[in-house]
Image 1 (tube, rainbow, N blue to C red):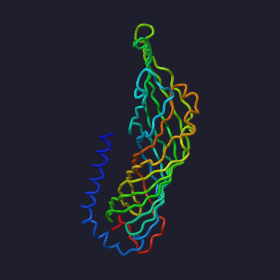
Image 2: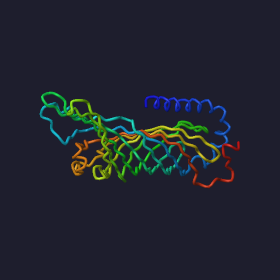
Image 3: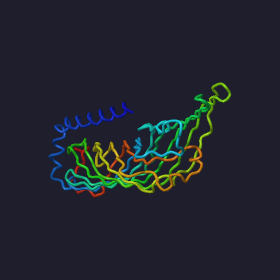
Image 4: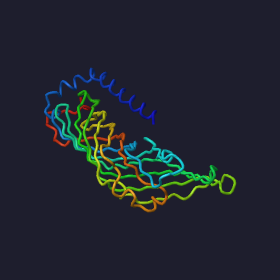
Length: 290
């Protein structure tokens, strides 16, 4: 993941540097079209898709059992950050005016995160049974982000920055638990793996949550179409789990699992295209015809 972040930052830096170098070569494009009202105000319709990676942030820990002969910290869940790949598709509606844009971007987002727990049983300080639980959450949301964007240049290759907020509506959720362990009761180390427990977990998650958004990206003009590379960071501001239904799933509680109070951060990378909705004026010339 660290390599992925470095490559993404390097790409954005390269695109920004290129746009500065391209400014001189595209001066005729800017000069000729600066007075054209079509370029000053426009509605854009776009479609994009990509991948996302989630970071669960534990606010308060909960457990099915309360240990009496070992510290409770030994049962704490260990969360994996940005380890599972999700995906998203977005429809973008953007109003642009003189370098500033206001954008509504309904998004179908599939996200995933993983945490692990361990349990052990002893007899006279000798281990009898050790169990490892791997918990995988698959969650589908309909996100409704509203973003304000500023274009850093007005060249054919135009980087931008954006901020905003989103409201997420839960569509579906599933949970699987992989159980493996070591049985010492026979006098040896008998390793085993049980079949995964897979359940619908929609009731365990909050129906709605919200958060803040910040990001950056770049548009590249080809004729009247803009190709788009977009990097977005979502910071969850409310819990994604249901506090009322925490213990409602008997199969999961029987397997020793119960949800913590969790907020979720998310990084997404998308590529797509934007299309102008206003009709071209008769005097307008698109960039690829100059």
